[in-house]
Figure 1 (cartoon, rainbow, N blue to C red):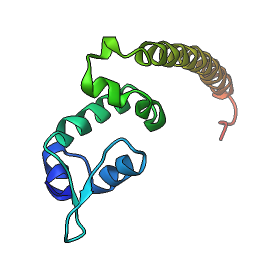
Figure 2: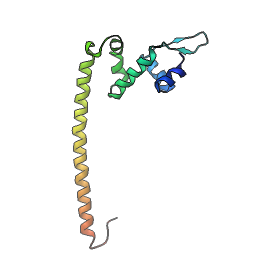
Figure 3: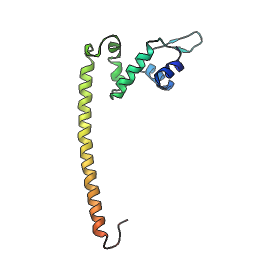
Length: 126
């Protein structure tokens, strides 16, 4: 199938498919007309790539184990679990940071509202 058909079947833009190929996540052969041609397995491959992108993994990380998971169950690919654990630690750290930012913003909002309430008797703060 050509790239347009692969795009239509997967809902992934042609531009993204070209990027996946550049990142060595997807392969094609060039037909005699110079067009990219993909095997029928490319549909599942693209869906698998999208799944891992949705988990927050980079294309570089995906490339490190994609070949394995396309041939085996994910559980049998030793590269996957350490990446998942690392990504989870990264997300946990981001959640802590976001909680701190949220608390700081809440304090700033509370402080500003309090000062505005105190100023209601006088000139309003702009």
